[in-house]
Length: 392
Image 1 (cartoon, rainbow, N blue to C red):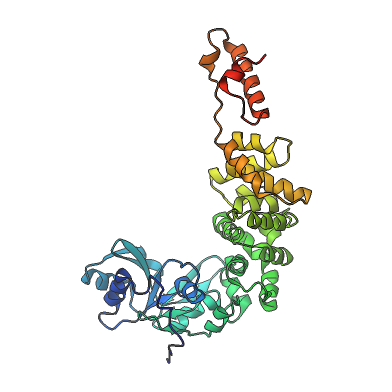
Image 2 (cartoon, helix red, strand yellow):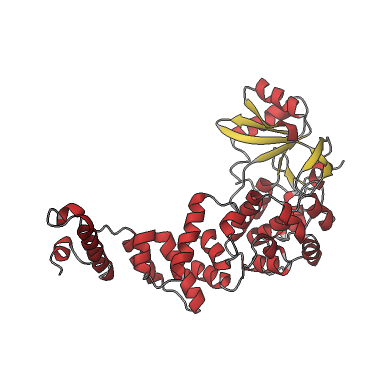
């Protein structure tokens, strides 16, 4: 097969010429095997965005990859040998090296694969054309399916038949929106064929594991501006499959205010803005994230002052509450509000129980501490210990 070098990876790409990376390439190709960089690292290098993990593909079998790496003095770990993946460790860095594959059978969640020696077969089992790009160890781009033009145009397009790609793995419906949010030209719109295929296969996402769905939704909401992608996801019916009851109304204002205040793209705040039933359970979030969502929902809908939220629940929850309240009230936020939140989140109540003993004990002691703390909070933490001790 003719595999012309259409262009090259930008020479300033750090990982390309790193000694550790090139040592792996030399090891795998030592006896004539082909080895290429593949997927996200190639895509990101072409687009000039911070790079993904450096993955490689080869026509060598997993067993041969193990032998070649070890012969070169590199550590080889069979992290996914049944699926063709060997992790080769070079200078402390792990590189996943995967044998070319083709799908033999798929059920929408898992695939039975067979190893291949054909780079085109390997490319066809991927999801989007901009992810089916390869690069030689010297940086030359290899484009088996014509994905380079899509990548350069920041166009998210399924490989060949969108229906077939989605039915091979229904997670690709969610990945389409995630990749749109992160990589697509915001003025380019959505491919009609892709949206139609996603809408017709929306029910398939319900059979995916909560962990896989949760990972995609969190990555989508962590994009700089996921609003258009989430809106399209709602239009196709996918949102109601993964987050029943969710609504996009407040997502746009929250994202706008995060950007206006130069705040991180905190997906947790955006998830609360979307609403939805039992999001933490449906997305199988960690206990820490579930706790954050629960606290943020609780304080966003009550009358507790933001500075008190910051003191009791921390900076992130208070910022989230401010953003959500502003969105619900359709009001802008002021960057000057962030400093008081930071001050409040670091405030330490200056009165200790021992300061009130032995004059008070038991319930009386607890009531007095609570009263003084409330007065201190109401004064926005300006009262000193001495002033608090003299309060009536």
